[in-house]
Length: 190
Image 1 (cartoon, one colour):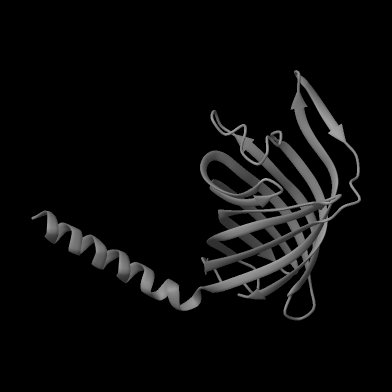
Image 2: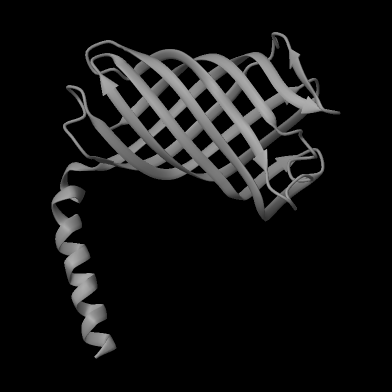
């Protein structure tokens, strides 16, 4: 009886997803982001630090499913990976984590909400690391798509780091907080 229910549930799920998969597709991007401000809490006080002259490189690969015709103004959701690379003085590092995102497009204006983390692979001066950790990276951004295809985008947003108990030491003890940035992005695919 359980196997019949399982087969019926899987068949129903595939039937519902089949038409959606035809219209979905992979997407990749590369962006360069210049931090404008960093905000974090320390000792019960909110600390705001000013402009940083060093840009962050970001890249990602996702599979998106449009929930409405996206090119003319719609909504799509996706899942994939996101990576941040940094260079501070002579210190280089990179972190990669799974990422879920939702995009809403209205003409050339694109609003993006993201949530990633839970599993973090990284490289820093201390070497490679791979850990399951209760650290999450929420983000909101707003982009203006340029050109007829909209592959080049300019905009900005906020990227946060939120450590739940047990995740404070991940990423070299980087404090929880939020980074405000302006950037440019090139998007490949859907």
